[in-house]
Length: 288
Image (cartoon, rainbow, N blue to C red; front, side):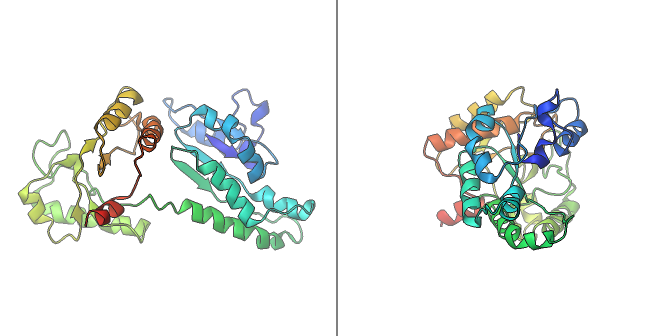
């Protein structure tokens, strides 16, 4: 689901496919034939409050598995062409009204400005606070990164079909993953999960100096090679309990084709039962 203003719209309402001829179409055309259903809900001229006002019908009604939001430049523009400003506080309120009911992953795209007329550089005064709001909302405290090795081979023999990393290479493999992750996120954690959940005393001994802490799980999502999202949702909701660590894949493709569709119902079901979602770090702190 792609929601936003004219940058997203791009003529989608006169396009037989409903995609328009902008970035939504480009993304759609770049996916393989097994791509998920894509909906363009952009409307030219919308401000954040406009998008929030039609959120239930145009977005939530589709029960999306992922939502991308690009909104905000019209909130700035109206200040200068109609003397109708939107404060950063009002912009944030509208954005939170859209984000709060979502139970699926969200992509927040920063509104942007390409000055093509005299004095449009001055618009930064209005736009920059809205960029700050977008960045703060995107800094989701429920998201953190941990390591899962570099080659994704098993640390024991007969670990599914993953192969086996030689004992002499175990430490180097994990350290390489840590270096790569730190280049992407300077705040990455040192939580570590063995591929396939397979490990023994030898693996733990070899990784003792890696500077990572192995984390297990008690609820496997069973999303690998699933035939539909239904059994994945049932597996998680039937086995979860307070303090559970649920493991799901995030790469999609043939190995995990329905995880994205299962994630929304899983989160919704957990919240309906009164569970609070936390990071591994928060969970470990609460157990001390």
